[in-house]
Amino acid sequence: SHDLDKLDCGSWFHTDYADCTIPRLETFLEWIDHRIKLFLDVKWAPLPELIQLVQQKGYSDQTFFWFGRDKFARAFRELSRDLALKINVASTQDINEAIEQYGASIVELDLIEEAAELITHCEQLGIRSMIKFDGSSEHVFQQICELAPDMVNVDYADAFIKVRASSLKTT
Image (cartoon, rainbow, N blue to C red; front, side, top):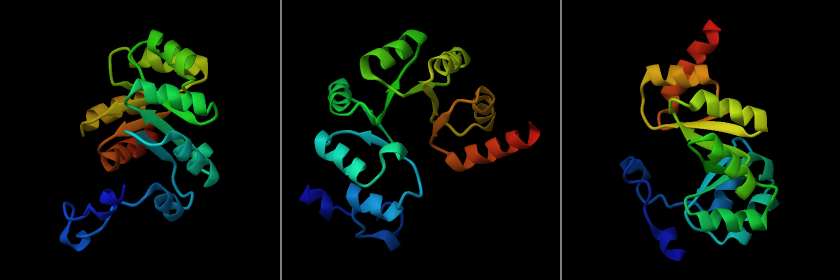
């Protein structure tokens, strides 16, 4: 909306960034120029336009989507069977349902006791696994590396990368 275009999104970070505005997705996609892959956590969007933009800009194979609301995930899947959809899971049954009901290609799980079993189940079904961890514990990062999910969703990426690099040197 035009109201969002006027909001200052940089002052919280540093005074040098005061009056920076929130970029529109189209502007952001042009700026990144295919240098990264995208995880779009969609709160709300006109789905046909969002899908069309991602496809027109050539990001279909570099993007996956997550929706906090079931009805948006279902509507998204009805509009596009080709784009990657992530569903949160906590059991093998959840994984099966994510594939059957949503055509999910990625599932995200918390670091739980059954994580190794769930990752193995994903491998058997040909679906990518992602572990989510909000903390910064190097010990937990090491556990995640040992589990070897396909992807991670961490808040402290720099710390995780250091642990991962160290674990790769010892293997």
